[in-house]
Length: 161
Image (cartoon, rainbow, N blue to C red; front, side, top):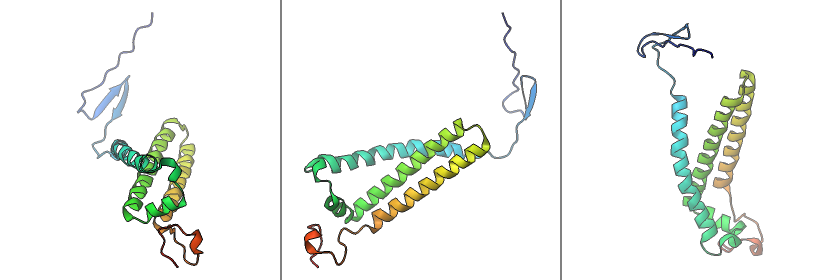
């Protein structure tokens, strides 16, 4: 039967720690709080996302005719209101940042080599930035009433040309 390893750890407030006979020096410099803030962001954004998602689902699927009324005109009418533009933009931004942070954490946990971690995170951040840029542009520049279109093709809420 093997004897358990004896570990001597010095007092938490001392500057020199010894673990299994190896001496580690604890620096007194300020620590980076990025990971703690990322952890906190995941909890706060998760709660906000639940509210935004259920509000989005309720308005789109439960009110009126439900899923059968979702078409170009429905989305165009919804995004004609600045409230829904901001709602969907906040939903897009929080969901993308929340998901990107989650994938970043997975990359940090499972990618063993620094170079692999670097390239995976670079691809992740570029993809997230692209989706955020294009999604935000679509939400705020979408025009359901394009000028010069025939009146019979325009949604009912568009002014007559």
